[in-house]
Image (cartoon, rainbow, N blue to C red):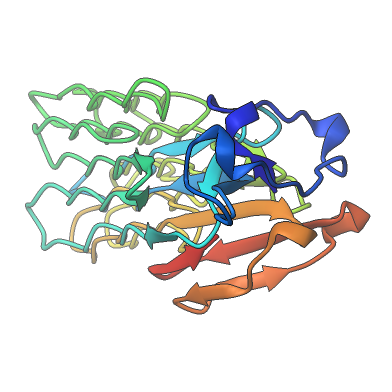
Length: 309
């Protein structure tokens, strides 16, 4: 727990001092709250916020949900007794044949005293001759006689989707991921999904926010999805894979006469000292204490809810 008067700006906390947090209050007279007032106390919190991935289009794969984290860097401060809302972005819903994919929904951490932190939903994949959509990471562009470019990713959250090709068997673009752009399609394969980014806020180094792989025709390989929950690419008569829920993965691109993929839902993870954890939540997050012997508590929200500092 932190003394607000000695920390009016956000304070840093590196990986080497995770166990060094201490609880302290401060004199009410400094802010003039009146005799007997307890003053404002805050707690340092690290976060990981991943949005929902987009859904695959008729050929182009979807982009991963945007990813933001301050783990191992500068902590934010939450005021003790105040409630903070956690919104988990859903993955983009699957579409019918001949349609471009849907964007995923944003994931958000907000509160009255907190600058709202928003990760942007992943871009949907393009269908034949249709652009990939912009998002946290961009969706892959559609292939065909008039192939299109991938959608743009959001700076600081993800990367662009790859482009489709006009070369038979018409490989479509892969969706962008948190750590790399989607690959371009070719005549023999759909574009690879952009790989996700590793983060160890839970105590386990895990990939999040991987892009889906683009489709290819009946000769060639759609191929596997990317690290971070990206869906596999479809082929003609072979369905693509969905993005992985809780990782914000983008869905794979669909082939001829197949079903279409959906995006994976996002996640919000909060980490703080065990001594600072209030125990007051809604939405039933998973709670782990003394993670890896660090003296820290980790809250993992896969559904919307709240935390009271």
